[in-house]
Structure formats: C-alpha cells, structure tokens
Image 1 (cartoon, rainbow, N blue to C red):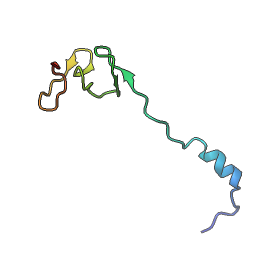
Image 2 (cartoon, one colour):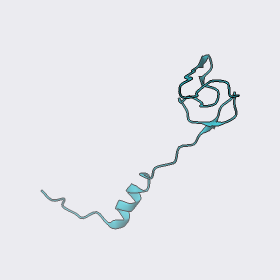
Image 3 (cartoon, helix red, strand yellow):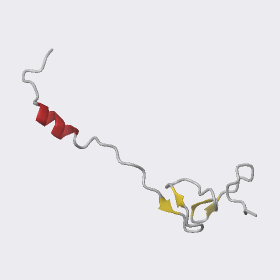
Length: 66
C-alpha cells in the first residue's frame, strides 16, 4: 500500500538532519597524559579507571619502558 501523500524533499532532509555521526573524542590519561578513549586501557600506563590498571607485557601495555 502506498502512502496517501508524498513527503517533500525539504521535510525529509529536515528529519535526517539529526542522523549525522559525530567523531569519537578522546580524553587524556591522568597518569601518562596521552590521549585515550573512554572505557579503554591506556597503552602507556595501563590505566582504565581509578583502582584498575592492566599490565600485558606481551603487548607492551602498562609496562615500564627502558
């Protein structure tokens, strides 16, 4: 079944004006000062959130650099 009236081009565009995607905005890690995404581990310090630091020596995450 077809719609009874056609929706205008401008009306469709106004509805779609809120569909645009925004880019991810990183924040700074409080320990190393490097940019990091929310809920992700910092590659330099291993910081995730207060009280949680992750160390993965095989990947070089959260280990001391010489």
